[in-house]
Length: 494
Image (tube, rainbow, N blue to C red; front, side, top):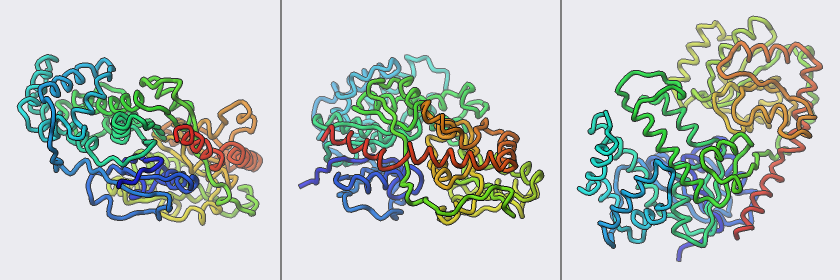
């Protein structure tokens, strides 16, 4: 007999096989809510990604299922029902999607993911009826692009979606998708198929927005003409296709979710702008177990130190814009000989980008002043740091800011995600604590350097910012208080 968990967490490319902020959050959530029985439905590109667990699973995780969406091996299903009616529902659903109308979605789930389905994934990929649908949409929309490119883009976007919705979905009372995208669409399918269940969505970052940024710079999407890689510029038809595709997945997830949770008010407004019901949306920020970070060591002001450590903590990948930090380090090091700069985080996720960063560091003659520390135990290194820097082009709610706050360390960050709230406060009461650092514009090494130099040249400013951060994390970002809100949410449906 199948195990029925209380909560099925639906995860895309994260826990327990990939480390990172979302994975750490999931691990801490499950450990904190030890009375809840969890199952995991993990979406991975291929089987190779799921061979090694990076976390020791808590005992209240009762089962794990994987869904592989880039295997290109179609599942074999027996079908049952009226295929002509099934194709009519598919056609009608696709006609209504551009209007933001998803009323046919429950019928579509029955057709494509029923037990058994009316139309199998093989039918969608290989049948004459599907060819006719693709051909008719091409003609009806009077598209001035290659039909062959259109046909293959349609296929390549449908295949992972079909594999996702036909995955083995565990039985659960609550489905909790930790993103929209493929995780969200599986959650919506589960919600439709299990009418006595609930769907909760937590978005750390806005999935559709993050995919839009990636698509703007994607080299795997065919372009009929050269274009700017800025996401706000006009895009080619096929980049717009993929952007709209992921936006469509988010819209469906919002419509079929019972609760929509995110980390800060800016994200909540983005969700509402993309069609989420405001009455379903609320903010639960991430928090920390601050006991892990408590230190008895008094933080010395910069003037009392022989060496000042300015550190970026994060993966060496483009979204963290490490190159802006390196350029800022050149300005900082030229003006203050006491400063040494660190980059603390994995360097193996994007080898080409890491190599480019090393070349840039060397060209700026910073080999002795800027050190790539790699993957390390931050608890051992935070006490040695003096200023934390983030130059990311996109973030949700970076936990490293809160970790720095625990140590009374001032922070310089770009104006992305919840960073402004974390630095200056979210509510009037929170703002009264004062800023714990500076917020700069994106891709602005001069502003980053200026902020670091101000903090490190003024002992009173340095200590007051550090104390403001320490008080803020204790008062508003304790993990135990925030996970209690999730427990209350779960219990409302259990």
